[in-house]
Amino acid sequence: MNEPMKKMFQERLERHKLIAAIKEPKSIERAIKYKRNISAVILMTGNILNVKEYVDVLHKEGLPVILHVEKIGGLQADPYGIDFITDYVKPFAIVTTKSSIIKRVKSKGMFVIQRVFLIDTEVYEHLLDSFEHLQADIIEIMPSRAPDFLEKLSKVSPVPVITGGLLTTSDHAKEALERGAAAVTTSNSKLWKLDFNQL
Image 1 (cartoon, rainbow, N blue to C red):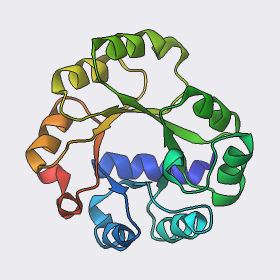
Image 2: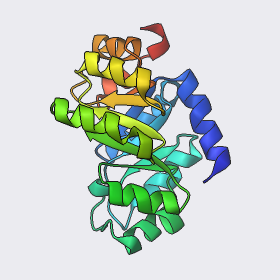
Image 3: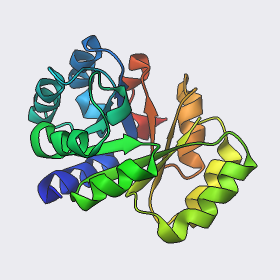
């Protein structure tokens, strides 16, 4: 694991409770513009030809990149694809819903965020049961509009919990942070302008 980048990410996460989700290339410039409010970015755009360039630009600006491997065009999340990410693209971390990808990426020493879609109580209970075998460094709960479950999870999770999805206002962000989220993720660049410590 890239220890200096991990340290920088943890320090930024302490200071800035916002992770910017970048869904289109033009949002890269916006994230850089508002980096004083952002701890990291989740990169959800690009393809195998340009993703390294995007990662390098953001890292150069001091923004740790969390790569959403399933959103990168032409990239297969097989062992060769994972090696391509870890050895060539070199983001700070990856985010995925798939335990097989988590296992492979962790074996390569990379920081991992596990995305969980909290669609019902069965998923919630399964997540609680899986904590004993958890490999991820952070859990991301989707959507963010489940504050009761977010609060319960934040209290018992062995790793930090972040949340995103359906987060459209600063009030949503404030509620999530008050309920125990370490940070919120959003692709709404209007919210990137805000200092979430002032909410």
